[in-house]
Length: 345
Image 1: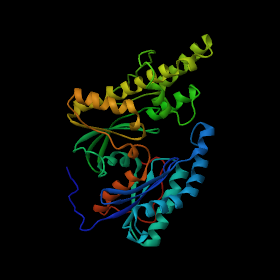
Image 2: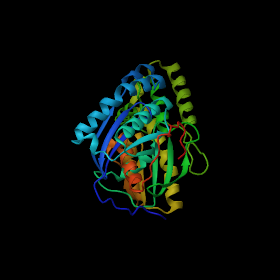
Image 3: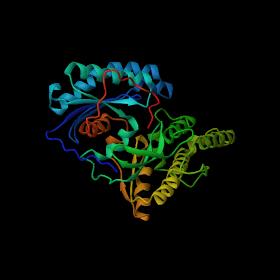
Image 4: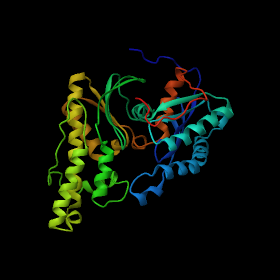
């Protein structure tokens, strides 16, 4: 197993750029220490109940320069101090990616510095190696990566030697949260609201099915459909059913997703005989997912790892740390690089 052993003779400063979906983010990292991590969200999508790709790309065009400027100023450096620019090449929305990649190419060309492409999902996992996290996992470890677009169990053997052990066959867990919220009439993004309301509900009040997909794979489309039919039946009896039972519905639905995730993660950890288990991705900000990792980890004698909250959702800090390790290996790309919406893991 090849591990990175190259040591930088000087402090390396990387500009990270993330624009895969609806958050425009820029970060400055010095070696593995974050100096700034600026994120600009896009409220324009709230009225549509989900991200509108064309509106997202337009908002990125408006945000990219102010966000990068803010990141450089907050870090207390000059643009001339930057040694390389790391950017999300994919996966993600093509129009959104195009803005970030195009800016990275122009910035690198203007300063004559190298460019580093980063897989968005690798960035989520490598966020664990940012210096200000409390602790870092040791190789090999399993990482449950859960976001709005992906749900994966990844075996991580080195910084860039990763393999998908299991993944969702349809909806991602984050997508299931947001779709469930929409069915209940909650505004977008609904996942954090389900987490909020679930804290005051009974997770055992209503029963929803746990998918039985083979191996370590997941499926959440059936759960979403079960919730739809359940709400239709109950609302027919009581038009105020959702309002009267919102907290219990959220708690029961959330618990079902978390149980589904840990059912497969526990199985994989046993088979691959790892003791270090981590979570990453936007849904790793979910309070029940975080607490259950610690509880189940304690029961199975795992060493558990959860990134700081600001490194869970999409952010350029995770792109910058991935870029730093690639910089040590001089893994650069040229101006011919283009974004790819379905970038291979």
